[in-house]
Image (cartoon, rainbow, N blue to C red; front, side, top):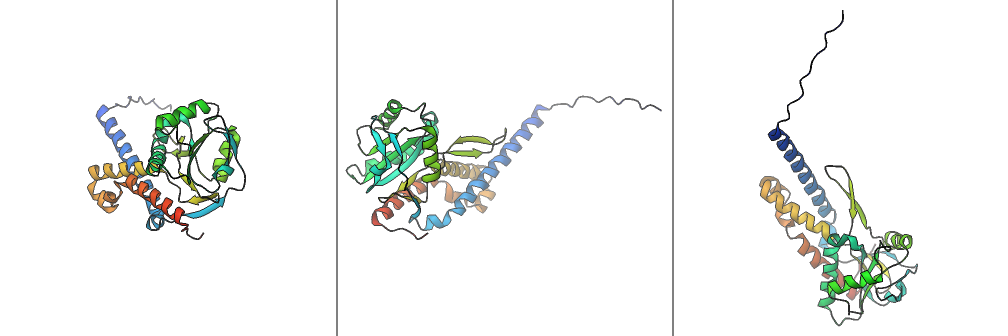
Length: 259
């Protein structure tokens, strides 16, 4: 005997329920993000307690490029100096803002210190030529500071040197409602007078995100905020900046951790 077909009515899409579901997902993602960023802070707790840097490796391979003045540049020019490095991509202005601001503030704090260098290497050399790099330095107000080098080189060589020699990442993957999303990572790295790449490295964007997560959690879920000690994280950007200064002080004093 043939079965009678079952007629299904289309599901009713209640806007209020859909909105509630969307908000629930967003809250879960927000809390998930908080947990991830708090886990990151716990992982680096030892570094926060002892800001002394340690050697990651030495730059034995010379990197060549041309700077914002279209002059030849090589990493040999960094010998005998303390260098603060960051990867560049001018299309990522918002993502670079924190790192470049920190570099500028350090250069202004020590305006007459000829032992300091500030280095950026672009990962988008087709778009970021010397003229564009010079304009960025002018926007930062450091165009006349001879201690700054914003460098362009062949893309593969630049990206490979940053990633494998300096050991700095300029890409990261983050979660979103649409799935994993790639974005630019703006890292700050110290290189000492002997061309030693040093850790810790700094991600001020992450510090900003941790602080924002903490503030949001304090407002939306005070009980969970207390459990995670969110109040201690609302000034993470200021803490990261202070730690950056402490690391520079240790480098100048030659006081490094073993390992």
